[in-house]
Image (cartoon, rainbow, N blue to C red; front, side, top):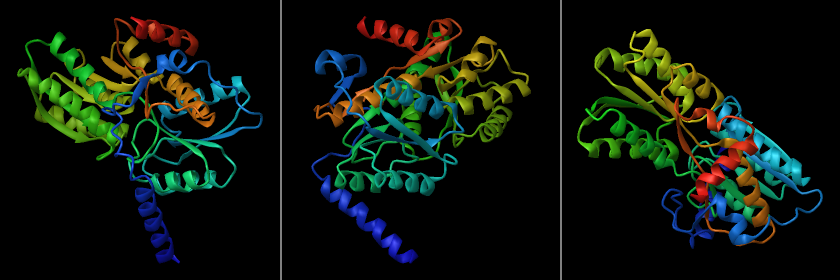
Length: 348
């Protein structure tokens, strides 16, 4: 039986590649067929009315991470306003690739008309793409791993996360120094792109040296341990860049334990509430907020527009901002208030 399952999975993967051969493998950061989220209404008009009883499924990485819970809030917020039924499920952990695949395949057979998929890796949900296509189900790949044959993707420019933090170092630490990177899960698109953006930008400046770049696997404790080791080997380190906020908060604890708070800066990514609290407390230096609630709303809107037959660009880019003690207050508040701030920024 096990061999039959493996053979079936391999056949599905092969069929998906053949069926989508006309699509180049998606690189969501560089794909030219794209539109900014703020331009959807302007270029495609108001969102079409959703038919009564429409069911949409969301499959996320995990609900143990606040970012993914917030993304689901965005799905449900817009769906609730439009009378759309949405189910949001996730794997038990960020490493449960088979569990996530099982959830997504189940939704294909349960009458959902559109699926919003946030894969564990770039490959683990690829079999679902062909299954959904054969069933006439609209599929949107939503942050942050990228399914190569995805026809539509909603999310931010991952590489730019790292670039923004590197530019902060260049501006605020002009003398340069040693820095370290705590990466996400090895091989995952978002982790690779965020790390590459930071590393290339800061090394091109010529005054900084990346002395360590190690996976933290999105885990706070692992990142604490990694940061502790890095600080022991590099007591003159000036800062860390972390691929998500959970890891960054673990690094903050390591910096405090080493007695280096105020000397070693720490940046994260995602903009979760605990990151904002840590910034307000003067501990975490900053985060690149990718506004998950808004991203969820935009992804839901994209799915509904596609279901209605609109021909959207392959990528709908969502916003992000570097958050520090200087500006964090303007990005706090109700989602609609944050949306207004971001729309104003996009118009300038």
